[in-house]
Image 1 (cartoon, rainbow, N blue to C red):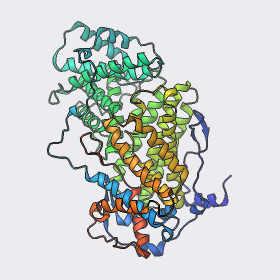
Image 2 (image 1 turned 90 degrees about the horizontal axis):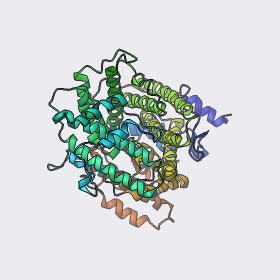
Image 3 (image 1 turned 120 degrees about the vertical axis):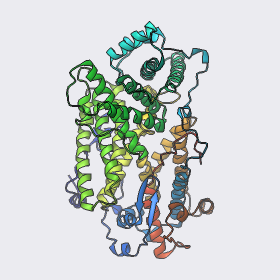
Length: 595
């Protein structure tokens, strides 16, 4: 039963039907309502039309998304929900707002490619302890093991058992050299690497796990060596597409999303060159068609997901059929329902990416109608997530929790898009609730690493959650911490950053961790006694470049003194900029500097 207050809020968005239930991460897959901790005093409608007319005008560009000051003015009522009332925003909060925004923009300033920047495949390096164990070709024992695995459910990929058997037989004969040899090697090595990731989740012996890590590193090194032998100018074939998709999947697994996007884009271009994107036969009528379908839908998944993350154009055109229809029904993998969900989410991301590029030219009605349509599709995906996990073994249910993180991270992006043209308390509250749900799912995975079999030196779930989907939930929760001093949200962020700290040796994760820890420490200072940390915070903020110089808003004047109406404008504008912050596409490159 809705309270009268909630009923009024629902009337503001009669079309939206958000998921009413989500995974209870504490209970391991049971359904429960996620608590909305937003204070009641923040749920009231705030009419700030008069203040909107007093706001300065200008053009602001935040990292990753082109955002004008017009958006900031339209979003004033949303931002005031964070700040309750900007007239009561403390000096400490404004110092933290400035420092946080300047930190994010400073990261954006590090994106420009240096003349000697290394952008080749060698940016990803995994070294085996003993170089002698790196094979020149997949060993026969490895081929036999992959052909008849008996170690539980396998994570599906685009290489079927029949295709694997064909490749294994060719390599055992030793007849192949050149491009085809390296293409087969890459496909088999990547399949072995993914198999070892799954196998390590089912083994308790630390000695055996260590050996798996060494073998995995040796095969990764061998794979990178073969990838470097690819001739992109050669005529495209199904085998070259399969090898490129395998290479992209490996880069995604290693956290190198830039190389993942590059290699997958090559695969997409070859798919288009051969006409494989114009699929009409569903289901596949032959083994060859089934192989094509598998390569196409995995390429589609990576193309839409990574392009949305990096805010880059997609390389694969829209398909004539839904990518979920390309999944072969005969495989019967327990992961098939999850793959369907991920493909559905990839379609949403592709649609949202294309839609976002037209936001500046679109009218509000079109934006709202499109968001309503996308959210209705998200509601159906939520139902699929809920029903598909009910009959799963306990360990597999945890993979669905990782999908929850991805689902809610995408939902936050949708709501942020909606907030660019409508500033209602309900939409903003939903954005905060879904951001919390996303982070709670991630915290659950962190807290149950050993139980889930992810207790590796580098847990594999990080590469298809934190490093593959937007960081928007973190930014939204950070905004709420600064605006409302929510201790529960701060504790949530603190637990996540503390858990990630032990993996900072990884070059890709280190960049994300550096940003999150810096923002968390800024928020932590808000919970000190008044005056205790303010001088130090002010010095830190003053040491950073000015907000004006970082935003390229040369005609925008925030004022020298933050007081009176200037205080209101500055606080709201700063909060909106932080709320819309994105990590720039080049920032995760290991060669980029760490702040």
